[in-house]
Image (cartoon, rainbow, N blue to C red; front, side, top):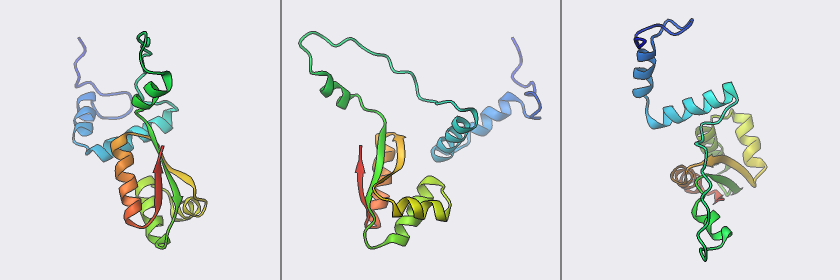
Amino acid sequence: MAETKTKTAGSGFSKEEIIDAIGNLTVLELAELVKALEQKFGVTAAAPMAVAAAPAGGPSGAAQAVEEQTEFDVILKAVGDKKIQVIKVVRELTGLGLKEAKDLVDSAPKPVKEKVSKAEAGQVKAKLEAEGAQVEIK
């Protein structure tokens, strides 16, 4: 078996050092790392979904689709009175620059975050609503 201390090609770091560094990241930092890797390499980290056969006499397909939804989009519907605070929150959540965040807020209704977990969608919605924005999760 190959030893994990071997250096990776051109990086100067061993696989073990890289794994340790990743292990020390917070959940938020890890999520940002995954998104950056997805963008850099044009891939997605989503696990493939297995399609299960519906049992006879079971609920309709539409009802199952609602129950199985694992990815949600957070849509900014309206800004409210605190536009500057909403822009700040959008920048914090998305990593966009000031102009891009302002353009997103000005063009509401618009998705702020797409294909996120239910928990993350709830957190994003709470932060935006705390600043007076109207938000919808789809």
